[in-house]
Length: 206
Image (cartoon, rainbow, N blue to C red; front, side, top):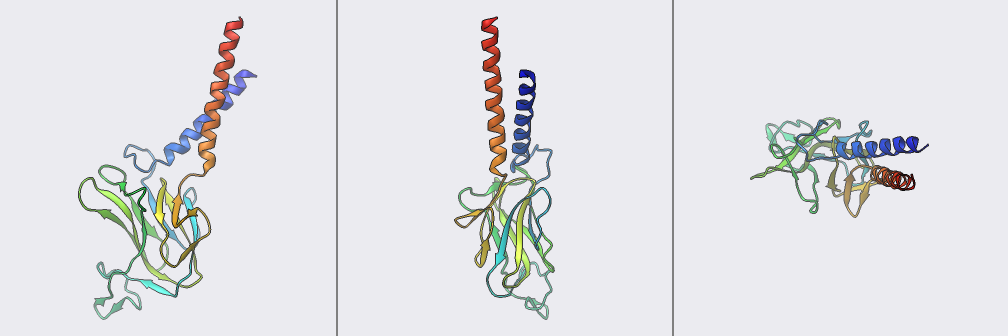
């Protein structure tokens, strides 16, 4: 019976440790993918940390006035692009910017909102830091989206004219593991400590 308890505790600890390793967004040696921030319409990628959002403003096209790749009505007049007005999901302060390549992982920003694309915001200087995502595309009032992080947890500020139905608090989007992962790891540690205590008591009585 005690052997079975030991095995169960070990597996719980291993599972909690694996979840913690998967959620590490700043480990360049990690075997898991670099974090990818995805603005989706409206489904979340499998295995990602997600938040459900609804756009509450008027219909808006977020244009890339600098890059000039989003050739949609309302963004281009002849060959002249409108001013740069991205939809920004920024890293709040705290936690502050995340270390980026070469000091950390390569952050990516992608979207399936059509037409649209995403660009990571990288702060200049050293160390290089990731400060969020610029997204471009057209959104309509009442449209539902998900914002997700695949490959590691990230905290982002909720943009203006968006409401959040999950994984948010006080204007911050928490794309992080569920609390159950931490609880699982804690339970595993407690179980192993209890088993060790029982083993020591048995040795003393022998």
